[in-house]
Length: 585
Image 1 (cartoon, rainbow, N blue to C red):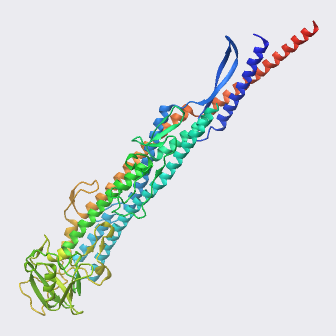
Image 2 (cartoon, rainbow, N blue to C red):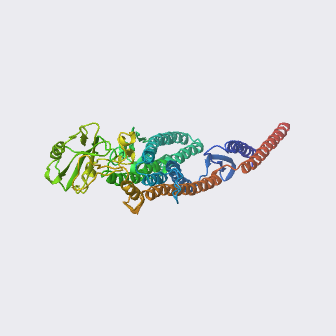
Image 3 (cartoon, rainbow, N blue to C red):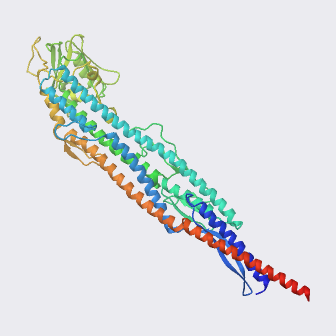
């Protein structure tokens, strides 16, 4: 080997070693940098004419297991979904409180506990039906339950609204990641074209891809030009030659009637195409499921409880009367004077004074009236009674004297499968169309009307001046208590199977169902977190920086550098000796 070749070998060795030392130092410095992978300077031998002429560095690369990275991407999506689900269901469980209705205990904060308190108040009133304070306690207990039911419904809708806002926020994060990937694609192409290392940029791109996958499930591959292509589950491009960002606007107002299917929530779109159904995992996927399925299911259970309870309570109080009778009764059913009226049997309308003594009455044969207007005319024909359809479309029956009241006995009346009072909604104890607006009737709550605990005398004939309303009977109170505690059939709703039991039992099943879902979500989160951590650790072990190894490598490279430097010094001495010898001859 000539001295020129030997010196070339030494110089290329120093140059390669310098670069390798720089790479090792960078590895050590970035060991704790998120997403950074171990870099390697790829060294090859240079051979000219069959003779080794040194070494050269062909590039700097990182060795990332692509299958392991793909597994981590999928695990990130699963964990993102599990995290959101666990967070929201934990909030839902806190909203519903805990049930404790065993025995006579009414401690706790759940709907079942509130119903148990109402049962206790009714039981106490049954022993003394005319007690004003005990009647007030029943109204208070019912109002507490109504307030809690409305609060639970409102809380569910607030969670739906929050999930919708979180979707909008997550879409912004997704768009940032998509744009970053697209921008890095451009930089990587430029760097590769100029022969520079793209390893660090690829790390940044993989980090953006991992973050993106935590928000939504995506597919991806690396194109022949080095670009990372990203797409939805159905193949719609999110990143190709450019970023195709998502578009979404959160709903300004969310109620139980708001739904994606009905257009209450807008779709998540890409280039004008709705891709909502394609996002099935990640944080956004879970938020969509929570907003459109999980939380509405709970709302439907609350609505079932509210409507069933309203029907049960009003079905009893519609046939009862406060004592003294209220001056005016206004129904809750929407009617009009021209509405066809098909009914049979007899209803009794009576006017009574403050002591419950009869002023006047009349029994009406309901089969005689073809329209609601005909009925109103007949009601106005009763002495001391004034009737009309109010501006809201409700039947109103009043005593013409402010010192008297109106009472109704359904007798044998049958209208649409109900008695007269129940059909028109007279003497409703509670109002509302569902859990969101379930409330104690305003007149009863304000004290303007008393709790309907009495019944109008249904004897064949009544005598003016005789007592026809009494407050001392526990009949209505016992009916209310029995209806609350007895067996009621509940239809399947929101994942709860059809069942038969008391209202407190059904309320407890709602709470238990929420608790079960929250527990399952917590377990799923733990499992997904463990799986994601396992993949992340495996990838870090495979491609991350081991400081001990890099430190040892750095020490070895420094020794190689010193050896190459010493070789150059020896070769220079040999050149000097040769030159001296030639000059002396």
